[in-house]
Every structure is written in C-alpha cells, then in structure tokens.
Image 1: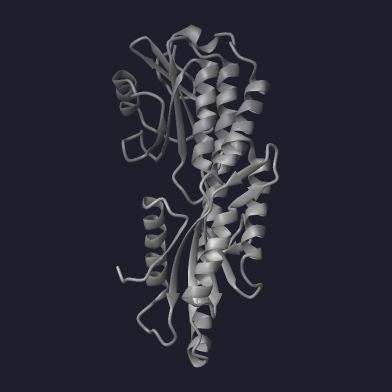
Image 2: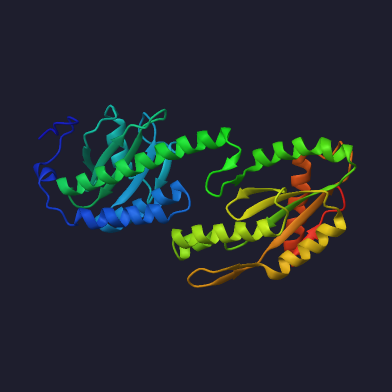
Length: 327
C-alpha cells in the first residue's frame, strides 16, 4: 500500500507494529542526559545515543533542505545504508510535521523533520531491522522537538554572545569585554607611568565536574573557583572567563616582581572546592607584563604571550611561568 504521507510503497505491517519501549521513562532519560551535558551538541549526541539503545536502531541527524550529505550531517551512529539513501534520493524531500517511512534491503527507516527558526530544518533518520510502531515514532517526534528547541536556543545564545561582553554563565567578562577594558585603562596607566600584568589562569578538571558528578556540583565549583580568583586580586582588577576552565586577570600597576609573588601564592594553594565530595584542583598560570607607554603590546599580543607562557609552564611541569621574551 502507499503511505498517505509520502506516497512511498510500503507493506501493511509497517503501520501496525507494537511498541517495544515505554515513552515516558525514555524521555526522562533523554532530558536528564541533555541537561547534564556541557554543550548543546553533546546533549543532542547523548539524547540520540539513548534512543539508539532503547529502540535498537541507528540514527543520523542532519541540517538541510535536501537529503543528507557529508556536509550537512551533525551526528550519526553508523554509515547510512546505501539502499535507504537511494530511496530518499529518488523521492522529493519536503520537510513536514508528518513522519516519512521507507524501507530497503530489509531495513526499515523513518524520517522526522523539524523546522528551525532562521536555520535549515533538522532531519532525523532512524533505521533498524524491525518494523516501526506508532508509539516509537511519537517518541522520536517528541525527542526531535526537544532537539530542535535546543538548537534554536543555542543559536539565539550564540547571537547574544557575539554582541555581549560578558560570559552569561559566570557573569565575568569574556575576551571581548576584557580587551575593551584593557584598552580603556591603558591611557591612564601610561599617563601615570604604571605597568600592568595579564595573568592567564588554567584550572584543569573544572569542566569535568559537571560530567562526572552533575551540573549542580559543576555550577557550585565554578562559583567557588571564581570567588577564590577574586580574592587573589584587587576589586578594581578585571577578570574574564576565556573558556570553561581558563580565566584571565588584568591587574593595573602590577609589576613583574609583585605578580610573580602573587602567582606563587595562588598556585601553591590551588583551588580547594567544598562540594560533595570535596575536591582540590591544581592551578597553572602564565603571565606577561606591559610596561608603561609600550605601544607595541596590543591586548591580542599580550594574550598570546601569556598563553604561551602557560603552555611552557605545563610542558616544564611548573605551576607558573612569566613571559620575558617576545615570541
């Protein structure tokens, strides 16, 4: 018989297979996995992995108005069977709210589409060796709606971040914000003949807490880490979050000697965290000083040299290192 949604010729049993899973517990597992992930793409991958295990099926997620290609694939658990791929290519691909069922080479597939604001639609193809039930397809559609919402919010978040000078998760400056702050403070430092120091602080293991213990422990660890860094500098100094576990501190008037002593004290104590269970993370620092009226040291160059000093410290198995030489 022809499927009413697609016109593809499909056998009658495709429309009447009983469900092999309970949708609600699976959806709870999917939501938990997505919330615990650090990045939206990791949460989506975790959700699809759960679907694969529960439905005993392979999955392919892509973003395109056309059938999937290597450039449009966002996630796949296995190579897409050639027979199923040819079946899609032979039929017009029109994103719709209805599930599209098709089969080839003893494999039964279903295509779920979701429209995304200001982006190409998302398509999810799942295939397995047994027939699909209506409840299984409803489960796929529900999870696909969650994935689509995650993609939309991630895109919105990225647009906000492009124009924002703050890291929304930590309420610290991001690199653009810190760069503007450095440029704003430099003329006053030059007039008063004062140096300044840029410190790049790296806390390995900070982002692993969310994955290993949970997002609540990860949030608390981040708050405590920031509080310890703030105590190491003056209230007027600028602090930025460069990545999940890397921070930058800009200290007005901080010369090489004073900052070397401060780096020694900071790395000696590390980052003790009062979470369950308590943890003590190491702290590594790379530093670079800007001398008064040094017009050649741009914020980008200072960051590059401080980051290189940090990498050198890690390579030399030292807690901190000053960048004295130009790269």
